[in-house]
Picture 1: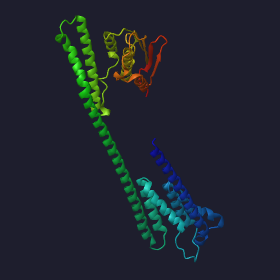
Picture 2 (picture 1 turned 120 degrees about the horizontal axis):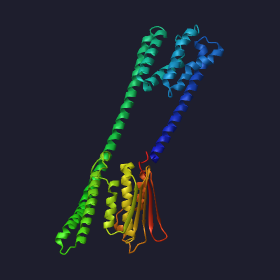
Picture 3 (picture 1 turned 60 degrees about the vertical axis):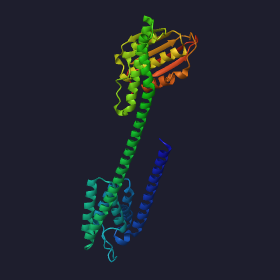
Picture 4 (picture 1 turned 120 degrees about the vertical axis):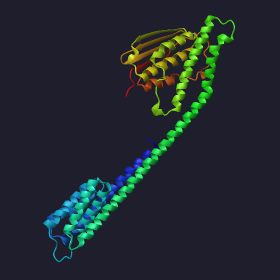
Length: 391
């Protein structure tokens, strides 16, 4: 989570706590007004006065947490109190409820119209209107009905405006994400064009030169001709993979298909091509590769490919041994090369992802990879790849 999000969340929590404190304070103030003045308006015995005053004031505490519950408590108490307790005679006060009670029930009705479900809003509105029509003195009931209806309508209007703004903000965020996605796709397409202009062109020239060399050069032996054919085949395979990557860069990430990617079916061809390239390679393959998922097969292929490339580059002339065991739940890979028989090639010309890339590939499917230099000057790569990637 970014620092801005943390600050925003902390600010929201502080505002929420501050609002709760304010609601509690207002509730206490309303109760402090209702209790001492109850005897001025209603004939309530002193032991019951704190309880009746609480029924009038304390439902306000639910105005944020559960306004529908607070309204229900306030409405039921407003229905019962006029039946049980009479007004104080000659007090001049003619309403069946305290002013605090009226303020609380109106506030809760407004809160219900802001946040409650539509059926709840309708029930609260009709019930409150009927309550005021039945119990308010004289012709005041009709005025209260109109006022309460206007209050509910105002709450619904505010609710609609807030929801509209939220929907507009969500649409703007979606548009921003879409613009960002399009920018990424445009950048990927630009990279694909650059790769095509540079890499694919030169690889195509390698293929053409390797295929035409036996016809352009005199006195080419059969062994040299076979070597040119191997070079051409390897270059064509590399060119096909580059074209597959260019297609990935030109397409949406959600619609990428893995079909052009190599897998376990191409491992034997990889080993044969490596041996034909002049590397003293031996291998032992056991088990059934059919249990490997497509992504696991690609990972095994890439780790073998990078390991053999590293051995040829850093330990030229060294014998290389590959052990590959397809187990029911995981595949074990061991690539060992002896000490170099000649000077190593410059690593900067490799362009490969190296040991770090192999570790990332293995970790991406829940596997492990370990590399170590041996005492005899050789090098060993060990990998453990699950047959199916971890969920």
